[in-house]
Image (cartoon, rainbow, N blue to C red; front, side, top):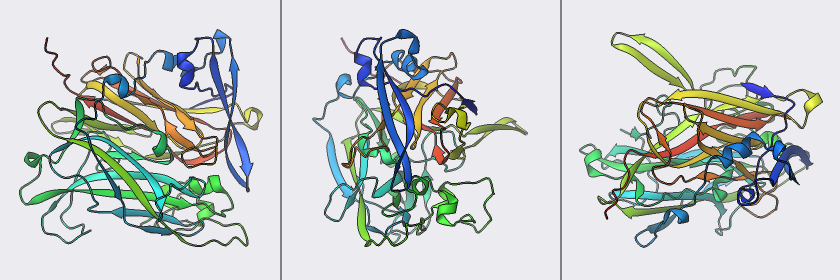
Length: 450
């Protein structure tokens, strides 16, 4: 970990990329106190001097971002289905972190083109993050013997993505958090994520999907930021899910806000239980030979690679911890500190990058994936809300910028070492943050016929 004090954390807006190179957007992340809860207010000021270019500005200027529309995305054959998860209930300060097996999902041999989700109430209205915080949702693919009862976990074989993490850690096909409403997930033509291929499903099995939804009701809580960062003292949790004592160094994270846990409330606050759903929208096309499959990779900045001696050579072992704490820097530089973490990961198989996006929490400054030669493969920056409506909640990360490089323009070589760099403001403590990077790779490009 590198803690860079006293350099300020600066982030350019995406719109500024279309302006003069002399017009830079500086962003300082400062605490915003409201109802005894600290969130983040983004203070912005424009300057017109070349020498104040931040590292994030330089990275973005060296990489061209493209939207799906710019890639000639067509929707003539795209099908769309909207589903609801099973209902879950939350009272003020309570937590729901449940796995829903055998959820509704498009069937058949198809190519997934996008997956978007949000929490809605019983009337179907979007719920703002300051009432119900969507910590994360993930979508997992699995195979299971036919004719088992609904929601049974008997005989399940998980089908993970192509990422590097150990076992089934970060093996999901899709997954986002508070940024879900403002983050594009479209896959440009002619690419798609192939699922439902009968040739890949074992005899006697069928393909199904599981969704995990982790939501925190923050109505009336004593410390809203502490609750959404799962601070252990606010949840009065001292043991993990297996009953083992938590380390004194573990200040907060997933272990401290499990299903049915309760965050500390303000005295005298009363509120009714409410019912919610995860509303998810899936877009897909029927599979045919014109579709080029992409592989899903999810990298984790906490990943450490261990190489152990084996009788048949060297076997790498990844250790993804998924989350970590950002410790506050010196009070002398309270508003000018940035915590930077890096990890280097070898890619056994490369390909052409089609899409990329980071996943971070409140306090995020940005994340970048570098190639072995130092080139920027993709840089993803947080988008903070500045209003009260769902999708633009002030102080929350409501979106992450995405990368759509022109097909063939960004290639990861076989055996190339990639570096993931993730930055957070550390003017105050942040617990249980994440530094993930999700990207799609095609091993071939479309053939162009004259």
